[in-house]
Length: 334
Ligand code: TRP
Image (cartoon, rainbow, N blue to C red):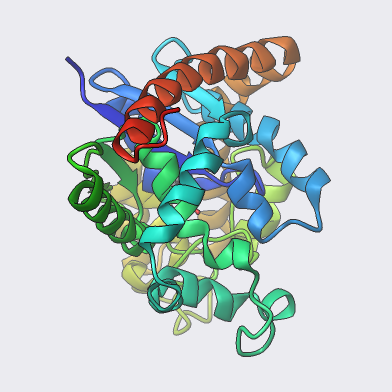
């Protein structure tokens, strides 16, 4: 029997290279060896986008197309929409008895997000909503509704996983052994730096290269990338290890070419503009097959709807079975 993977993504924007190197490539590798449930977490996205439902709706399809474009096979991965699984909402209510409000306030992921979203939740988080504060509980429901065993996540999600494990232990302690305690699986490449030198590539940081970006967009972004500040003239030698252009070359440039890039940079034989142009070319080549596959799906939007429907039906079946066990354990199986 294959183990079950469950992971989720908030549909709030397109995937960028950070998602691909940090998570997506790992998903592609894992899809053969696990029963793989992939949740498009629209309800969770609404916890901080409740005022913007069109954005969430639109991105359900965008993010599904992005995930398919990187090579996830809908025959192997069950794509499903969170809001179509009412058992998740039901479990969230049951689990909310097992979590204290102060524990949620202390969750580092929640704290960090509240600090980032001042215009939504107030300068000191005084306007935080019940729904946002409680999303870790809902995420525990996401995982356990499908008895997810292995949860591939970035390190920013570890406090949410820990919170889920606590809920599972408490549930099993009170109501008897029912739920499986999930294990996080960290990808070995958890953070991709931004072209601006920021420690993280992120949509909100404005430094991301999206999988759907065309050459013109990529050119603009790469031309503004941070290079070794000590290099002033074209033929000054420089240190590639502190250059964001070289950092991205390492991801997409073939090995022999990469060695040349490094050597020429160190010896002052290569100007930054030429080096950036080469990177732009290589990034476009790298994204070409991804964008080609994406186009095949996008040109046939019915196919995307079908994939979501099939995955959601299967996920719903699994959730219904688990719900039965939960209700029996809680003595509410009338
Ligand atoms: N919180 C995750 C994120 O922001 C998305 C998510 C929703 C998730 N449900 C999940 C991740 C369940 C892992 C398991 O990226």
